[in-house]
Amino acid sequence: MKSNAHAFKARATVALQDIKLQKALANAKSGFVDKRLAAIDALPEFEQLREAACELKDHTLAHLDYYLERFESRVMAHGGHVHWARSPAEARAIVVDLCRRANARRITKGKSMIGEEIAVNEALEAAGFEVVETDLGEYIIQLAKEPPSHIIAPAVHKTRDQITELFHDHHRKYGREERVTEIPDIVNEARQVLREAFLSADVGITGANFLIAETGSTVIVTNEGNGDLTNTLPRVHIVTASIEKVVPTLEDVTTMLRLLARSATGQEMSSYTTFSTGPRRGDDLDGPQEFHVVLVDNGRSRMLGDEFREMLRCIRCGACLNHCPVYSAVGGHAYGWVYAGPMGSVLTPLMVGLAEARNLPNACTLNGRCQEVCPMNIPLPRMLRALRVHEFEERLTPLRMRWGLGVWAFLAKRPRLYHTASAAAIRVLGALGRKRGRFRYLPLAGGWTRARDMPAPGLRTFQSAWRRAHRRQRP
Image 1 (cartoon, helix red, strand yellow):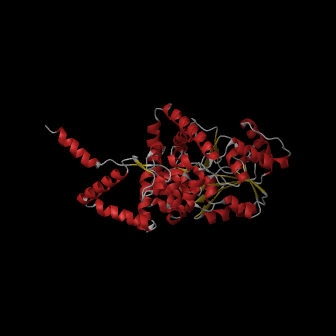
Image 2: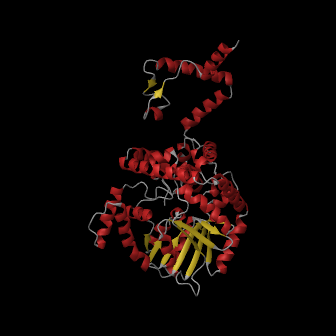
Image 3: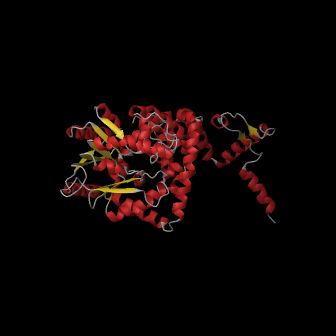
């Protein structure tokens, strides 16, 4: 997926005016937030689990080379193959080559954010393969030719009416002329259409929520069962996963699973949690003949050694998106790349470049809600501030903003001058806005006053008012 993160401001403006999108986002927000809160309130030990998971992940990241090598050796011991990709281009080339060697024609694919990150669908289609997304949300956006707008609910931006029209347009070739409008009917129609794809696929591609070093197993978590059909029915199963997904043991992964579903969808556990360990054995009733794992770096090794290391704790639950006021207002497509919301505002600049994505960390209000709800306690606000600092240091900030910050810094380093200047500015603004009590337009604050009024300040600074009140209280 090509990045359009540089166009965040323009995309956000369009999103705010999209009535259907605003309706879909409002419906999704209440469901995710309320269900998560209920699930966590019902688990008294949630905070202890959170602490344990953070310690586990930090330990794994500190010894990542060891656990990745152990995972590779266990996969090979079970008859599977591990492929290493430093970049998205290498990962795409590996997957395309595996599909060619399998003489594949049709490929079924489970929902995978790393698949979106490396743009594997585009590469496979360019190579002549038919690729069918099997997660309902991913299937919907594949028909719409759109990227996902949420990491766990790819079609959260679509209303039921929009999905009805998509299915009506694309399913008539299967003899389905009637418009389906009720959710059970929509799901059933998708199930009927996808059934043939499952049965005829030559290769199945899934992601992985976790990789287990102890056993060489990959773990996927779904609510539809499409992942099971994707990794057991085709002759070849390819897993694409980023390197930080590894955990040491089976016991460790149970800790992570208890956090994941509660934080993502408000469930105690997802409907399906599937462990895949190598290809089919002699006495197995199903499973692939070949099992391949493609491990993708794409800048993560670099993150291990810098101030953004803790971002690698992320388990892709989406809680930070669901509680973010910016994401809730503009949706995922405004962010212009694979990852949206607070976690995307950190990951996208690190992966596609700060010059391309500098608007994302600047869009954050720094209210801190994202870290508060993150099951891995990732310090997202600190990282977003760090990216703003890097932007300034790399001289990517617009000249007008750099000039303004320079003036402010000059005054802030000189408290007396700062208080004098701010008092003068407040007196002027207070006098000008006294009649209305607000400004419809204010120089240097046009971005604010285009959408809302700017309250007129009082005639005193906070500090001068405090000093005056304090003097009155003295005996």
